[in-house]
Image (tube, rainbow, N blue to C red; front, side):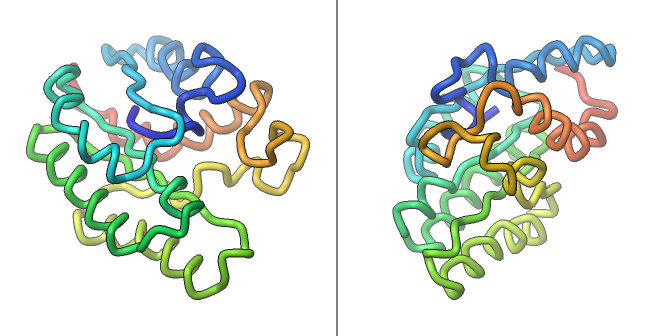
Length: 181
């Protein structure tokens, strides 16, 4: 797992985050895989790219769930830079032999239609260009429920983490076939 605060358990603790809940789900299904959560709150795609090779070398993943970009968008950073950084990480993960699940995010409408469309489209373009599975919007099952978020309105509460896991699981499960640690 390689992401930002949405995967690092910001405000709820790592053990309550959806990636922490993924470990038991893998065991329940008989998968030999384990979860290493290398997510960092506040991470941008540039920061993620800078440390990605070291993380790949350390964990030697069979599958990489790549969920970065939210902080790029919230800071209004250029979409082309985000795409270049994600593209480099996808290529490095695949070169290492890992399968990739690219997880997208949507921005609030106050960033304007041009930027938000370009931002969301960036994830689709990368998925097609690299032929990797895309989960278009991590927070899809809870986005419309204000009570699903902490007081900051950005970070999900502990109680909705299982819903996020179920959402991710549907996209991840097909990638687990014939995958060995």
